[in-house]
Length: 210
Ligand SMILES: [Zn+2]
Image 1 (cartoon, helix red, strand yellow):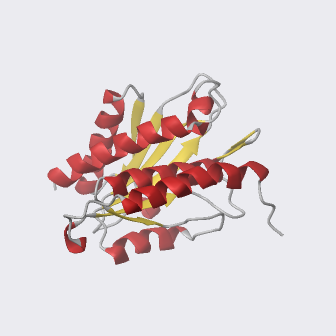
Image 2 (cartoon, rainbow, N blue to C red):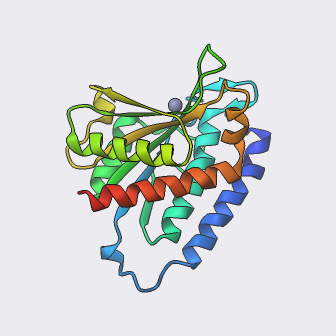
């Protein structure tokens, strides 16, 4: 039987409410079909915890970050879909087909990372190296995060789960759970909001460059 993590519901409630608040402030001038669709994919879920560092569990933190990010996109008038809204497993292929089926303009996969070296920090952005649209999106996300003071490394890969012929895809490792300072940021709702705003700004630039 899956164990419910004690802190999760308490911390999960706030992004949930933010999402509802954002929905009720949706700009009324935008017609549904004019709004770009952004799919946000919180990594892992269920028995796949992702990175675990002490009490910090990647699948929970990225779900909170995804809720905050979704709220920010909705506030800016985007149509947002999440591939996962709770603690359960989602097959890798379903995450991508979800985005393709929705006709998404962008798929943003959210993760957090670890290292044996506790001084490593910053974001890493993975993308499918043979897809120019995904490569451009990754560069724009990297530049926009760096404008916000985040150290970024771009990681081109020939890894099938990142490949989508129709939906530009970026996998963002938002930071290192093993860095003593960054791990505090990665738990912070305020930092999640900062990242969410950067993701929205980067997405706007990606859509302008299509
Ligand atoms: Zn991960």
